[in-house]
Image 1 (spheres, rainbow, N blue to C red):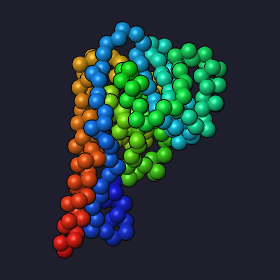
Image 2 (cartoon, rainbow, N blue to C red):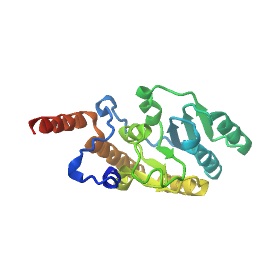
Image 3 (cartoon, rainbow, N blue to C red):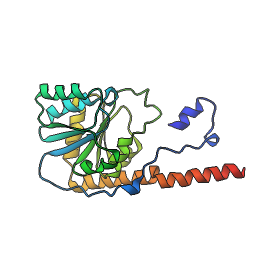
Length: 220
């Protein structure tokens, strides 16, 4: 949405070059998803704060006894989230310490799907969003449940399922929909996400793009 934002200030598409956030894709070798025969494993990694709307995920797990949610990270909301899960009697919600970004792919590889949520603030995200954890999920080739007021290019391309944010029933429905798909289909979704990341956010490609732009500007 950067083009729409720039037009508010009288800029044309030809007036700027947008180079998005990048990801060192070559550093992550994805492991194929497996049929492990246990509960449907969901994973969340990253901040536990107000902006992440994790309360909806914890509450959704009450509706999903057939699934399990593992949360890795830290933040100001973590203590209240642990208390919330305990008061709900949600034995299928497990909290873990934060891990280095370079190691996120390890627990993600053990999951069937990843999950990401934000607050229902469409004005905040009207020009798009860019989250490190989204890149990590895409690199690991796991489908994504995306609870957000707007979708994302990778989700629209087929890398996951969008659902309404801050709504436990909507989150639960999206998880059930994903869990009901075949392992083959989930692998296809994961591969679609990795391909989207490679085509749009691979750091090496973006560096080449930046170099080309600078060369062109210097020649002018």
